[in-house]
Length: 107
Image (cartoon, rainbow, N blue to C red; front, side):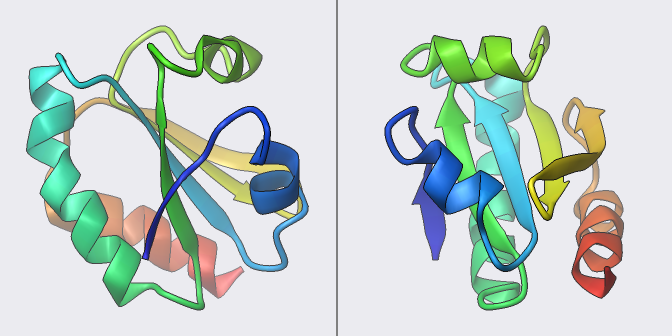
């Protein structure tokens, strides 16, 4: 299941999550974000119960984008135990993003 994170639920759903989290910072108008969206949706199903995968719309949740210093989208932030362990920016092949997720899931 793909989550939609917002300021009201972020700390509970992300920072205190008992499993690792990948956040896709995106915007509806962003072409590369739209290109990555089906990949992120598929990974949300593939990694269910191992990695919590969700999205943050930077236009609707600007405070979260600022909190993580997001300057370009799409940006992917990987969090384990409430700490950022990796971040990557830009559209990428499915296999590359999968490698980041495998590493995150492995701990």
